Image (cartoon, rainbow, N blue to C red):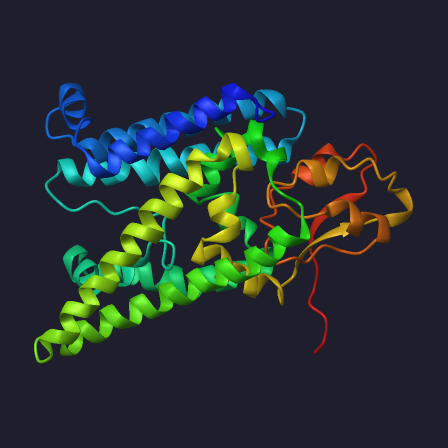
Length: 333
């Protein structure tokens, strides 16, 4: 199951079939309504997603209980998913309002900058979305790196680090995959920016230009389906047993791309004591982002890669204590 054997292929096929059925059919709706009145297939999906994070989190903590950092990080991931990404949104729906996922921000949750979403939720939620996305996100990324979101808050990363942890070692460390990552993740960020701009322009002039409005809705629908549903959901999760757990985070997530650009000039880094490295390769093997950590460690060079999510697993599996996560003052420019 963990080494791409036939059970891994079967599991990948089952996960893919589940997502296809979820997006295109309503077979899960009767089951959801059987559990509680008013629920739909997306409520059931949220429940299953949350249970996967909680169960995977318990298993992860059991395997890594000697690391206080990973225990704390995983407990936070589990709590954020349970409360901010499941209980609170569904509670809002039960009270007759619209759900709001406080743990997802723009540009990952791209629709939170759409006018219909902003005005539909009201001023407090609009302020939260804008301030968190445009102020909190870059500030924290500068001071503590993208790890605060990608490894402590985000539900996509949360599923990868809990349910998906047994397959983290399958991520490709090749130079070809790194070059592909550089192209695709920034291309998706650009698409997110363009789509947001198109939707905002359409809100302002759409009534006077119906042709542009029609095109704008197509752009919005295209991004939501191909990037939000197919790439993030279907591909991003179903390939866990075959290609590792951070395919979406590495090659597609616009939030990861934005945070990575800030991290490159920020304070976060993974320091390495090269003289202590024995080149065992554990750090590279268990890097879910496909970074060849060993090459940095052997040179004693700090890791400041934009793709690093600061999960800390490389430091945890190092038998010599070569690696250390730190937030150092920035160099003078």
